[in-house]
Length: 371
Image (cartoon, rainbow, N blue to C red):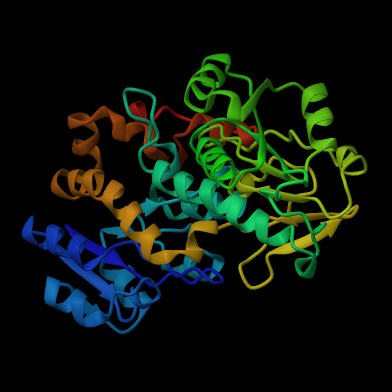
């Protein structure tokens, strides 16, 4: 198969869909790999390394898109890239279509086969292609939250850990999945007073076993969230329903009860955010203030640490990518039914239920569409 990898064009996105080692593995498996010149520079991978790995280097993104049967990216295509779509193209990347109707419509019109990292669910219920970025985003959420609590960045001037004789910062984490767990780990490590909330009691029990008396676990209800965030210095939104828009747990009216200079980091922003006041921001202008509360809503948080993020992501995506490249998408799904769960669009049809329901549209099960 002809595999493509282009430079990401999203604002301040430095990750890349393939490393030179990935290229070498695809080439060794008998595939042709086309890489846009300088695609990996932001992650510290010079073009020469891709050439040495066996990639064919092309000067423009259009050339790569035109030649590719499967495009391996990191972020969803932007409007400038919609014109590169062609029928039958396998687009293997994060898509987050529930938050982007325009992209979904463009993919349907072009009959692109959209294989989304964030909806691939393994037999044990894990989400392996989302997990590495969730781990990074969760850890970064506390790092960034701590920074924006500093007075020069608009925060209240509270140190997460406090010092002897002063109170610790109160951190509230909404969602106890991979993002929430990793946020909890860093917040506890930094010495904060941590509360984590979820609707899954078994998950809360698991975290209680891990962290013990160092955290407070709470069942997530509207009343409990409202009460907890009113006293919080930092709130981390980490709620995920695969393929579906994030539920709005943080209501606009809750902000009026929060402390001036408190911070919200909405990691769920890719799926529309779990705060009613969320809007997408970028690394070069990451925050805005509503009702005295600092909002950090960067849509590609792991892009701030692209070397770590690229290696972590491609470690996970390569396994399934090689399966698709070896047999084609249809046969790969028959050999490994897990891949069906990643298909969001196919031959002009929506094949992910949660995406379709986000827009009130009809959908067709991927197994039926590929039959």
